[in-house]
Image 1 (cartoon, rainbow, N blue to C red):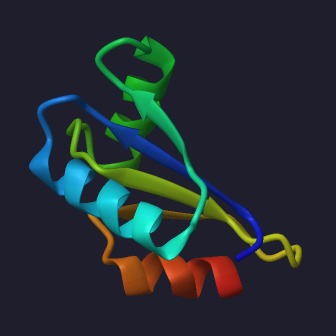
Image 2 (image 1 turned 135 degrees about the horizontal axis):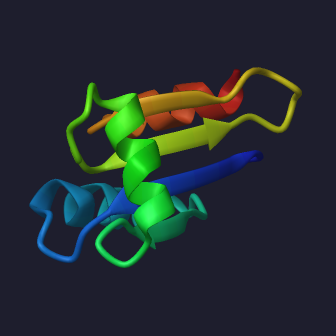
Image 3 (image 1 turned 180 degrees about the horizontal axis):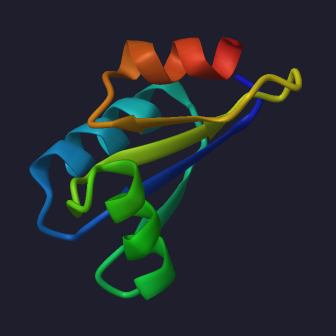
Length: 85
């Protein structure tokens, strides 16, 4: 897969652990940012989620020049689809 995946997460988030495991299994590289340690990233997550710090929030930028997509608690299939856009 081409493109970039950035996952905004926390250490205690079970949904984050599940998605990371699925991405690892599929060989999809991602950058992980812990919003508890990065105020700027926490603000990005809040903006994307109506003021809530809901994780995982995932930012996908396809390599083919498509628009970036921000998703909250996406499935593996949704991440793959966004990468392919």
